[in-house]
Every structure is written in C-alpha cells, then in structure tokens.
Image 1 (cartoon, rainbow, N blue to C red):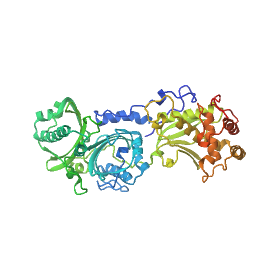
Image 2 (image 1 turned 120 degrees about the vertical axis):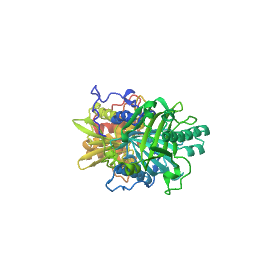
Image 3 (image 1 turned 90 degrees about the vertical axis):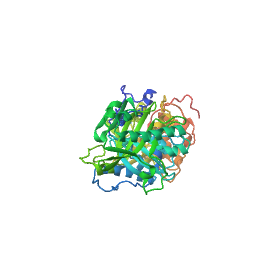
Image 4 (image 1 turned 180 degrees about the horizontal axis):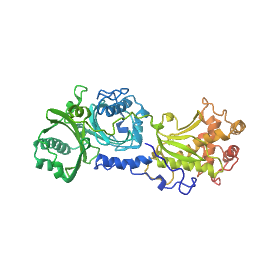
Length: 533
C-alpha cells in the first residue's frame, strides 16, 4: 500500500503539543456480521492511515506450487502465497511472517487470554505454534484457509481479508469438537451448530425452497463472488436451489486425508467469542456434487437469533478448477507476487527542511510524533536533522535494537522500533505520547543531527566533560559512548518536560546544560526551574 501523509499540521507549527485527538486511533475492526467485501471497504480506510494469527508455522501440505515456481494454473498464485506464509511461520521468522500483513492488521480470535488485537501484539505474546496448511478457498477480496496446529493436532479455519497483497484482517475459527473438549462451548451450543451443519446440507440437497428459506432470516444475505452470486432476502436465496446438486458434510479426517493424524469429528469450526458467550460466526466444510464432479466449499455463516443473517461461500482452489466447465474469473490472486520485506513498503512522506522523508510502516499517529520531534529542533533554533527515511517496527533492522540510524551510500535511514500501541502504553487514547516514545525519537534524531553538526573538536570536549571513554566504539558499553551521551542530552534538552537522565547515570543539571550548549550553542527548551545539581 502506498499513501502520502501530510507533512505539517494545518497550523504549520510542528512544535505544538500533541493533543488527545491526534492520538485517537481510527476504528480497526470490520463489522463481524457484514459481507467480506463490505468489511474490506471499511478496512481500506484504516489501511490508508496506517494471531499474528496464532503464531503459526509449519511446512505447507497443499497444492503443487512451490515458492520459486511460476504459477501455471488458475489459483496457483493464492496457493503459493499461503504456502509461503506457512513456511515463514515454520521457520520462526518474525519479520518474514509480518511481511504478509499490512500495518495495523487486526486478528479476531480467542486463544488463551488473547481475544483479538493487532497482529504485532499477538506476535509479542508468542510462542509460535506450528501450522500445517491443508486447503485454500477463494473469495472476492478474501480467502479462507483450512489449517491444522500439529502440536495439538487440532484443525481450524482462518478467514483473511487482503488489500494490495497484504492481509489487513483475519478471523480465526477453532474446531467445534476441540472447543467442546476444552469446555469453551457448552454441549447445547455444540449440538445447535452440529444440527445446523447437517440441516444445511439436507435442505440444499432436497430441492425444497421452503426448507432452505427456514435456515435464514428474512433480511439475510448470501454471496459467492467467484460465480458472481449475490442474494439479499431469504426468498431470493431460496431461488438458488438446484436439484442437481448434492451437499455432503465433510469430516476432519476427510480434509486431512492421510497427511496427518487429525482428530475425528465434523469439519465444523466456530468463531471467536468471549468466555461464557455463544459464538455468532461459524464455518462448515462441504462436498458439493454436481453432474458427476465434486467441489469442496467452505461456508462462513453469521447468525442472529439462531438463524443465518449472512453467508459467504468460499470454493476450494484445486477442486474448483478441476470441475470448472467455463473459464474461471480473475481476482485478487491474479498475477499475485509474494510480498517483499514490509519495511520497504512506502506508506507516506514527511516534509522536512525542504526535502521529503520517506516513511515505511507508518501510521498517521506515528508520523505525527516524528513531525513533533522535528519541530522541537526548529523551536530551539537548530537545523532539522537530515534523514532520508523513517521506518517503524516491524523491521529487520530493529532486531536487538530500540532504535537505529544507518548511513550508507549517501542515504541516512532512521529505524524507530516503535509500534502505534507504544504511543499510549497499549491504550486506545492518550493525551500525550508516552515519554519513552518521545525520548526515543528525539534520541535517534539527535544522532542524525550530530552527524552534521558535531565535529572532532566538539566530540573531544564532550568526552572530557562527561568522562566517557570513546565516541562511538561499539565494543564499549552503551552508556560510556560519547555519541550516546550526546544524543541523550539532546533529547533531554528538547523535551517538553523535565526528566532525569538515568540511562547515562543521572548527571547533575549543570552538566547537562553545559553539554547541550557545547553541542548546540543554544539553551534547552525544557523548563529548568525544577532542575537541580
């Protein structure tokens, strides 16, 4: 995804305090009861400004297409895409997994104490659980994959909505039988869904429109976009009854075949729910026989008051192309390439000192804090730090770092190892960005500023004044490097509140003021009235 974010606030003053409104996030979650394409439309709005599925992984077992093979048949691109995602999980490759997800991607699931949230949040909960990929089913802007978690030998289904090669939201469905054994659903709820699962197949196989109508609410919707099928209202849905088609519920064993020692039971999966609540989403897998050929179809239901209010049908790739009589349509998977490193995806720009700073992995709130930090240099009468790009987490450059400045081949790339949730300590709204986020950004920008404005003489004077032993020897402890001491002092002096510099030994105020003046020939912006020593 590509987006140009505005460079300055409307007032033109980037040193203004950041208000609560600036840190109020856009809604992230699509409506659970909407059609997949309606959900995606809502999510595109989020994608413009801005677990890990389940920390899953393991070798894929579906489809003929390998990661380095060119697609040769309809749907191969989709198979290759989800195979590569499975391989990334199997390799425990954090950044490889996140390459498949858009910034701000959201996962809706119930697993342990995690009941949905940002993919990045899920990743930090770990550990990774292996995932075997069985089947890939296609929708208009979404896909439904059938998976197994080998450690528990349990199956599940994952509905993913995609935009521009990236997953922007996921819903994870767990096997109904597994949920029952774990006491996550009551016997009554399980019996209800098992009955629906059977009655659905019987009704659609019967040719009786009245039996089909009874499954749905009067305003229900049904979509099967691969075939251009959309219906609204139970009577219109019943018009789709075809006496030549036979619907058969599938078992977990039938899905897995001989590829795994899967548990027995129906291929019925229930959506995420809070403890003690009944699930309102479910997926059932069926074999649909029509004129001598059988396809596998995943049917995702949303229920309201015990009847289906929304249904989305996902045909499985390989069985569909085997039975297709006419040419199959193009879709989001057509000519789909595997995603490249996410930290190379441009999400916007920032206007700074007459040039543009390219932003990777950015969101509106993250960019706003960087603009504020640049404005603090301007407010102190200092030239804005010169950087070519700013990249936020997740980035491979952030492994083992809280922030990093990389200068090579004429470019100066700043990596800020922050997620949007770090700005408000995990809360949705806060009046001011978290102190550690502000200090971290000013610190890294301080490094960029010193590269242009701190020569050898100033470096030597700083080392002598502070008792640090080296300017930037990477073998020397962080707090004993003059460059780190200087960046901390720049952050201290440019902050909008007075804080102790504990990371460099909490030196007295007089030393901090002297070092700031040595570096900048200016006075700190911070209010020194409460400063001592």
